Each structure stands twice: as C-alpha cells, then as structure tokens.
Image (cartoon, rainbow, N blue to C red; front, side, top):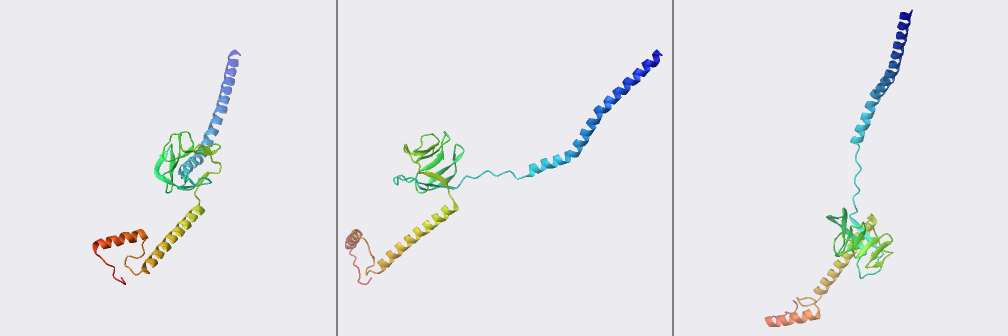
Length: 210
C-alpha cells in the first residue's frame, strides 16, 4: 500500500507539472503567432515612413518691406533684399535697397538695424518685445514684414513709371536740341560760355545753319 501511494503521488505531481508547463507554453505560442502576423505590417509601415518625403525647410523671404517710420532723414522705409550667402547667428542678413543699412539677428536673439552687418547687441535700431527702438527712441508704428506678390507688383509698376519719366525727359531734351540752329544744341548758360571761349581759342567758328 505504501508503494502504491507513493506512485500515485508521483503521478499526480507529474500531471501538475505538465499542466503548468502547458499553460506557460501556450501563451508564448500565441504571442509568437501574433508577432509573426504583425511583422509584415510593421515592416511595411517602417518602410513607408522611410520612403515618405521629409518636410522641406522653410526658406527665408528674399525681401522684406519696412514701413511706418515717420522720419524721412533715416531711410528705413522700403525694400530690404537678402544678402545671399551671408548669415549671422544662423539667420540671413538683409540690406536696404540703395542704402548702406543692414537688418540682421544679433547675439541677444533680437533683430537689429545698423550701417554695419554685425552680431553684437548694439545696433542703431533694435526690435524689442515692446516694438522697435530706433536711435534710442520707441518707434511703435515701424513694422518689418516679408515682401508679398502685391508689393512686388507695386515695385515693378513704380520702376516702370520712373523709367517712363526718364525716357520722356531725354526725348524732350533731344527735341529741344534739334530745334536750335547750332551744332552744339541747347546748353546751360555756363556751358555755353565755356564752349564759346574754347572755340575762340581754337579759332573755330559756327557756320550758320549747322
């Protein structure tokens, strides 16, 4: 009887061990199957993420428009063009069209204006949290913004009008010169006197009708 009892307990223990082992193996098998099913999906998603186009870096505007500064003695209003290939503190530098003035970012994280392109925080004009300060005085109406297509059209129209004025002025001068009876045309009084003295020294004479 004692040996039978020992054998019975041994069988019961073995059964319990096998049962626990099966319970432990079964979840692992399900996880392995799930991983095998999801692996192609995850791999495809990763591949699509790699192939997806990366967002392009935003390009800085090629020109800025400054407006609202009341003093005409300081030519701040108007167009500022980017200086290609030049950066200060990782940001582009702009130059006022027709003037020796630069707009840039300084070491203090502020935009500033100065006749010299520099990063030190001592510009002639500085953009602070409260607004622009020009020559030590607040300039609340002064604003700087990117150039728009409408600004570009206005600039082109202004340039064309200015060109037309120059052409008309030159045409008027030519017509006036053609209306006189000397080969010198119409000259200012001082220039006429200089011309007369020069021709007198040379012994030259103006032939009537020429």
